[in-house]
Image 1 (cartoon, helix red, strand yellow):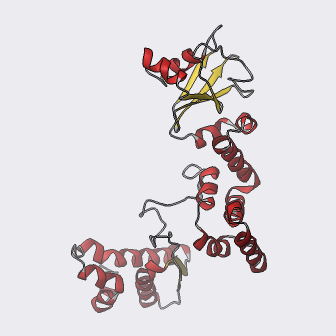
Image 2 (cartoon, one colour; image 1 turned 120 degrees about the vertical axis):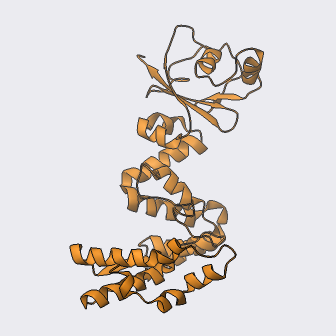
Image 3 (cartoon, helix red, strand yellow; image 1 turned 90 degrees about the vertical axis):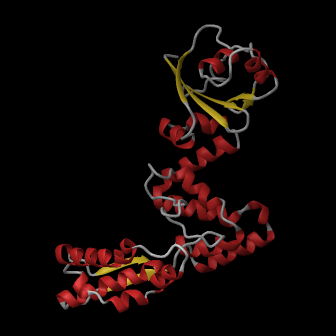
Length: 291
């Protein structure tokens, strides 16, 4: 009631976002219309109880921040401020954020260093220069040089790799960047050395959707036994043929003989892990016990 009495209907209705929603086919609900009042009251509460004088948000939050400014100044008579920044959008013009479902997070539990690194490595040429200027502290002269070299050797993806490295190091530190590089080498370059150097946390981050299995190495255990114990192939002739047809690899090496006995150091890495791949994209992480 306190916030509502201080906000003017004409001002709220004049907001571009409000007008656009009112003209749209789906219209605007009462809850949506009153949202600026809720955010304005939030600004007032933060100002009263925590001394907050500045609210920062994306350009799409301009109207909500202005409502907060108006409410706080009318209730308290004190000066507060709002700052908006341009929205970061994808190449298709879509907003990047949690509501759009395409967000990258600073929290490692939500976006691993590898995922953050790969997000920026995949950026297209027409946006990478802008991102270098927005997300890194590289001097503008150096960015210009990077783009000049890219024009000569576009196949090296120099700006994308530099962008990914700078952002990952800024967010997760040098160890986070090294982790991202290890994961990249292990997944895309089938590097056994990188796979052996990976921690359990990195394995779980890299193969977040992959099943994990803990197995005991039994004498004479072969490729077929491993695949079946990991529930990676069906029982019977079809599973056997999956291996002989070349659809199975262990630690990046294709195995076509189901009877091949597992060898420590080849099929089982120094860190007690085997990376089993069925087909092109189905991974299984095997953690060996009591080697």
